[in-house]
Image (cartoon, rainbow, N blue to C red; front, side):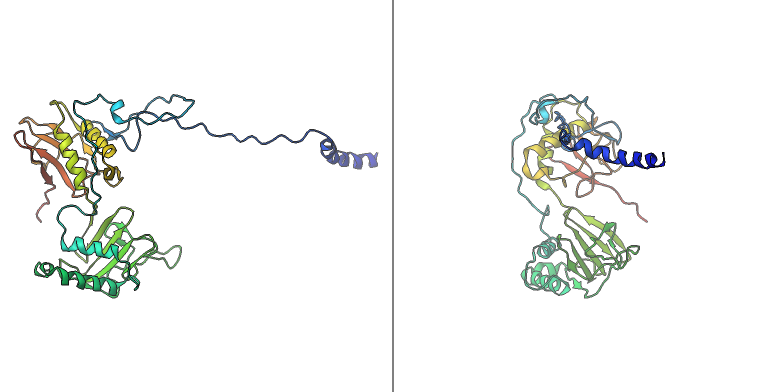
Length: 336
């Protein structure tokens, strides 16, 4: 009996190996592939709609299984076809809108620099001198920057914008980053320290965020902000399109659909950086009272969502009933 108790466990260990000899091969693993995501008429992230108030709403659709992927259809297939046709226009790709100022030109020079000397305070200084020599009117306007060889901004932010890790390295995993002197990283982000900013006369910093194509700035001890990329051509197309909308009952949803048409019809406007968004409400600083739509005096009003304002931070666009010119209004700052 003792020998039998020792033999039984050994027999149980040998049974699987014995069964596999001369038997059927193990089954081939089956890779379960996910069902292709069906494509619907509505394309989230491209087609946008708004509801009353300040809430942005994307309508949901009941999923419908499809055997094969269907081609995308234009926004006109899910909304009533308007009486107008949107021309397919190519908007020139521009970095900065409006007139080219000395500061904008200098910033473009900083971004375009591709010389032998590594980018730093000395290069930024030489570029500033080059601009002053070629544009004497800049000097007459008081454009006179002085670069700092050291650090003016010592933290890891310029205003509210986070500096890239390469330009604000951390000394340890638990420590916050500290800004490097004037430099550019591998992703094209640029940090510039000024002993005297070009137009204010005070010390400060600039930081170019390559992902957002925008310049953050700070005037030491005074103010900060972000100069975002402008899309003047896209804005002009939208103004023409909204101005041609028929009827008196259009609102924010129609403006959002018009923006979709511009995004789909003009290549440069499909950039995710052209991300303004209309609001169905009104703004107290808008020159014409009333929500987005046609006001009582016949003016067209487009109010912008407070969290998705245009690049120039306009709160609304208006166009009088007897005019073809749009007026732009901004938030009025309270006097201290």
